[in-house]
Image 1 (cartoon, rainbow, N blue to C red):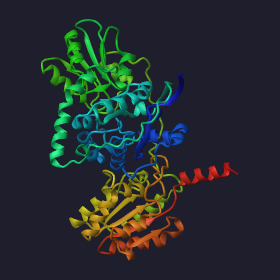
Image 2 (cartoon, helix red, strand yellow; image 1 turned 90 degrees about the vertical axis):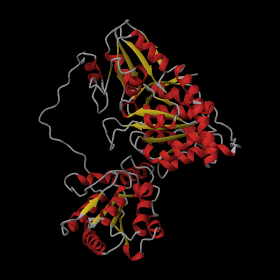
Image 3 (cartoon, rainbow, N blue to C red; image 1 turned 60 degrees about the vertical axis):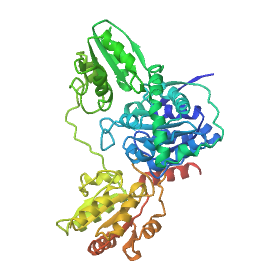
Image 4 (spheres, helix red, strand yellow; image 1 turned 120 degrees about the vertical axis):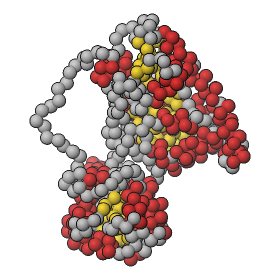
Length: 532
């Protein structure tokens, strides 16, 4: 028996995984993937079945824990945004060498146009690099249906499967027809040790086995029900479309266009060649980087006319939309929207009452006393300290970079070198940088701005809450140069004095301004009031 539900793309992935017999989801919060884990955490059947769904410290620990669940024979899902693939890459690539036991699906949510990200990287390159199958839904319905398909594919090939979505699919809603849930796998740990112990001798055999599977992976992609070739007028334009781009093609393409919908990788070469033989030229429509376009050029040769992002037929950067796809077809948009006039820009700001505000007020006051001061920032809502009215940070590169960049700058002679990092980011990837700084006696001051939550992505649990003093001491920070302060205007004199003293100390010092996020505190107070 089936029913229809209105679901976000993220929710369709989550519900599809639950109905596919999921036993554990492992994730670190990151837009646009966060809602997948949150949905599983709150879903009644997931609670009834005891599906493991707590947040992990970072994407690498998430990937490894999921691989452990797979080793035990159960189905596991790993969720992250695209840059999280960089963090988990070691375990991810090696999981293709070990292979899997229970089905293992890795969900990468890409963010074309960088709505909340530092780059536009395309996770499909990771799947190709690791030599594993990939699937890419075009709709919320496919996102739901592809989950059991992906787990079965994973278990049949004994390989992880990469599932790629983009922001526009993750955060839009559609009606999804939902079927009955499948049972979970029984516990059955793998007894073949040589698959899992990647000593060089074993790894060479496993890699050879992975290479031997490539023809089978290609055949499965060619026969996939999600790779669909529809031929139109002979000698006309052909289109290869993937993901959300396929929807835009259906919406705006002129009649008679031949279309190859690609939703499973590696690319189906037979269908691509069949499309090329029927058409005089091919346009590739894909969200992200020209992943398909580059490979199609190799499949068909340099003489065959292929257009897309590389040729400027479609924008080289940013996400696709019906208007720019229509323009590529030479079709005027159905409706022209005029940009509103005389509206002032409204850049994002730190919430009123946020403790980060008081941290930056104190930092700016002290830094003004040092003409050469540099403040290295990190990933989190406190990154907004780079904008007016504070303009307090000089860099923000990747998770955890503040401490290690401050250390490198101090090694070069920069003084003062100050790092600002959030509580969740510190446990994600800042602790190792602090250990490097302590071991090298770096002349830096580290501010761990602790608001007791992972605030930027909606207030998820932060792995190190109430543990930061103990962590810093264990990493070797000297007790007399470790301070906890409460960032409030009334404490500004004390906070600025401590920052000034620690800047003048020639070594590693850590200051932990600690005050709960205003958003999570307000939510707690409302919940408390509603329960009375």
